[in-house]
Length: 398
Ligand SMILES: [Zn+2]
Image (cartoon, rainbow, N blue to C red):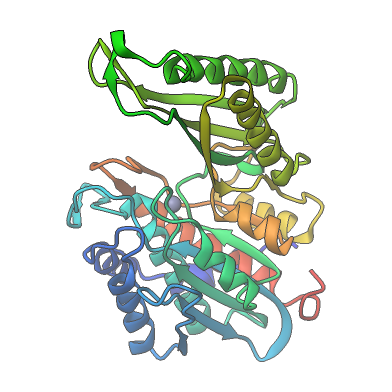
C-alpha cells in the first residue's frame, strides 16, 4: 500500500508550481461572498474547460452560483476519490490577491480557494502523468458554506444528486492532525416579547412579563443545561455545550422594554441526535414562556451535524500512508475544531471525509495567507492518495 519513491517522483514532476499559484490567484481575484460565488465558480469552470476537462454545472438549488464538478476517470474501474471545496468567503471587505515571501494573500486565500487550486493541480498531474491506473477523481466546488450567510444546502443537494465519491478530501486549512471526530453545532436565537408598547417604567402594566427578567431565567436555565451537558464529553472533541453569546434589551434606563433577544450556540458529540438537541432546546424555552407568560420565538440554524471518521475504512490507511511517505512522519489523530463539509459527507452519505489542507492563517479575517510550498505538498499528496486509493475495489465497495 505504501508508495514507492518512483511513484512519488513521477507525480512530483507533474505538479507545476507556477500553474498552481496562478490558478489560486485567479480564483482569489474574483470576489465571492457567501451566496454570491457565481463569478468565482464561472472562473473555475473556465479554467478547467480551457484545459479540456469536461465541466458540469449542477445548480443544486442555488441558481446564482451553480456548482462546478469534473470527473476524471482512468481506463480501468475502481473507487472514486472526491476533492471538495467551497468557493465562497465570509462577508468582509474584499482583499485582492498578492504573492510575496512564499505566500499568497487575499480574500479566500486561506479559506479556501488556494486549497481548491491545489486539488485542481492534483487533477492535472494525474492526467498528465497517467499515474491513475484505475477508478476516478471527482472534483466539486460550491457556494453557501460559510455561516450564517450560507446554510450548506448547495452541498447537501450535490450529495443527494450523486456528486459524491467513495471517500473525500477537503483542502481546508488544517494539517497538524488527522481529524477523526468533531462536534456538531447549531446557532440559536430567542426573542422574548410582551404584548404592550414601550412605556415609562413608572407606567408599566403590572400584568405583563418583564422581558429582561425572563431573559435572565433563560440564561439561568441554559447555564444549568450546560452544566449537565458538560458531563458528556470526549477526550479529543471536548464536551457538549450550550452557550449564550449575546443578550440585548432596552433603550434607556427608565423605559419598560418590549423585547429581549438572546443568541448563542449548542454543540454536540456524535451519538447525540440533532433532532433531540433541537427538541430539548425548544422545550426548555417553551417551558420558560409558559412559566412567565412571555412569548418566546425560537430560531435554530444548523451549522453542521457532528463528525466521525471511520478509522477502519481502507481510505484512512491509504491517506496516512501517502502522508507519511511525503512527510517522513505520521499524522497524529485529533479532533476537528470547526464544523466543515466533512461533517455533511459523514452525516448525509456515510463516506469517510478527511479535512487536510495547506498551512495557512487568518481565516475569517482581512489578513488571510497561505504557504505556496505547502500548496505544492497538498497537490502532490492529493494526487498520490488518488493513485493509491482509486485503482482498487469496484465502484462503491469502499
Ligand atoms: Zn472553509
